[in-house]
Figure (cartoon, one colour):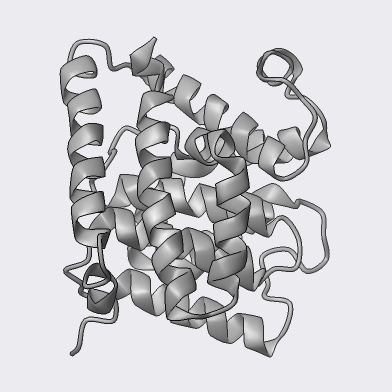
Length: 235
């Protein structure tokens, strides 16, 4: 069976960008993480990520407010996802569609259509994405995470809360594929720190062109490096 993601690594600069980013993440996790890793550190990373994701979705809550009370409704949705995110690791491995549906259920409880694609086209996009997640590929795990994020964010398969789902799924892929098994980096904070580039490159990806995908991947490598710097391990 052909590798559906191999062509991404052949795009100019992608392989070297992701190799450098992965090396940087490994340094943070190895040099700072070995003696300082705890469940509390993971919880702090997840909280920072929930806050950053919520802000990208329109929340006005500060990190201090999220830490104290959960923040505004958007922040509460993001925090709700974060509290159950790591329990979905085995689900993503065996049943990606189920994991994505659960992320939406956590983000949007009470909606009559929760966890279900909004139409047949959205269902097909989710099926294709699940196929990528279960396919054998030589593409770096960071590349897989970036594609999962962009596809969910731009296809908006659920019709609500898709950005929150996309960023949570990205973090989940990084855990499942061994980049950050204890979820100590904060990719959502990387995207927030680079918000203009984040939003611009998602628009480019949504256009469906080779150039748009290429630009998104180069951007995401930079965002993941910023997410490593935002880790609680960094102080």
